[in-house]
Image 1 (cartoon, rainbow, N blue to C red):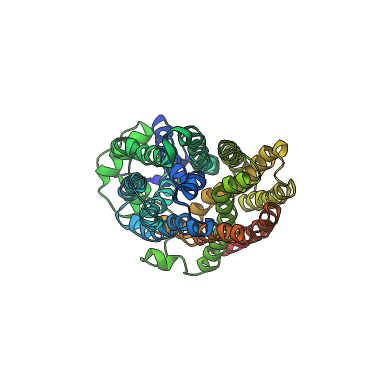
Image 2 (cartoon, rainbow, N blue to C red):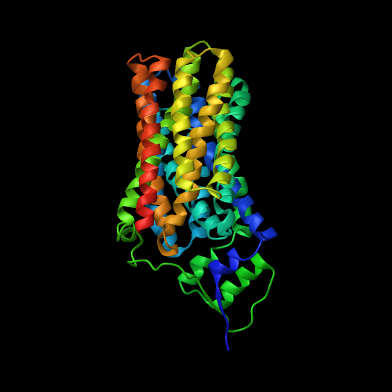
Length: 438
């Protein structure tokens, strides 16, 4: 009699293997270079504005171009990944944002730069949700939140690394050198992704891929062989429709999806305004361009630690409560940062705490979202949350330039950000209630 193997149960019942840790490491690298290229424009903005003699509001078009591309990439990549596989979309996305970041270094005008950042953003928007989905489908549920947030710390680390790289490269090589560095890194790791990253076994089981193909891949994960004729399945709630996008609105998934979108929107609005415009705000308050870049990078370092802490608590408590509490901490931290009046002695502390809470909460949300959808629509659910939420990053990028142009003070801009942070804390609780009813 042929045996039946439930891929999800098989992974859940076993400890993490070396190959699963390798998958985590590769996904971590993908998210790290993603974080570098997403944050890169904020660190070079003062230098570009000075060299091209343009206003901050005019440069806001460039700052918002990549987020528009992120929306396009996320909305397209999710359904595509649920049809053709996670790995293919991941490889294409990494190559795309690497190439167009390199090309951004050759631009001579704001329009050219905006177009290149838009196209780079398409690749950036496709990478993160697919890395998250693939890793989620390869790690045991008992430690899923912690391991996925570990992966997402790569984003914060990458954003911090490009800040430190900018502080080092800008004085000698200018902003074009920073872009060349940021574009080269994803292309360097592409061969590793192609050679070592597997396709999701759960995806292959749901899609009815040949059993020998799944057996070979699952054998690499577990180190065991399967007898001829073994059937592989992934037991889980069945999708209500074969169209991934329609699944997001089937039954009670609509309310849950909207709650996730609102939470992600509000969180990204805060994070993008901070990471995009803090170097400029700090510079206008007397810091050197190097000190401004280094201080802003502390936001990402704080977020790296915050993500790990949030993920650890999510595996032991109600995940949405942990995420909500972190967003509330973020609201308090940005208010404290604003009230500090850009006093150098306290800047690093409040920037680090704001990053700890806001990026920690946002990363926790990325780890939580894949569990809300079935495998057949998981990449779509995660990517659409990121895609719809990206409008918050667009708004944050644009609003920062507008408010600076209107003469808003350092404290006024930052205090205002407490509102969307608090709204994110409220919206994530709504997603939990919707998930329990789905």
